Picture (cartoon, rainbow, N blue to C red):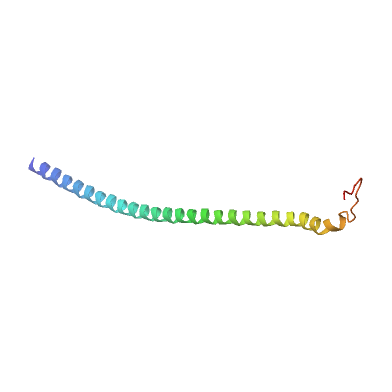
Length: 105
């Protein structure tokens, strides 16, 4: 009987040792998972910074596009208005006609 109790105690001790080894493995895996999570968070922070930079560049591009559109619009208006202004005196009436004028002395 004592032999059986000793064998059971030995088995319980072996099982406890195995459980502690499994716990150590689980803790190591947990540490690895936390390191991977830290890396993932760092990558996420980098991605957010890149996203902010991309939005800033997009805003600059839109501003430049608006500036280019404004310049093109002004150039088109100038192409229409300037020749009209330059040719206006040539096409204007140069003689003055007085119709039905009476002189009062």
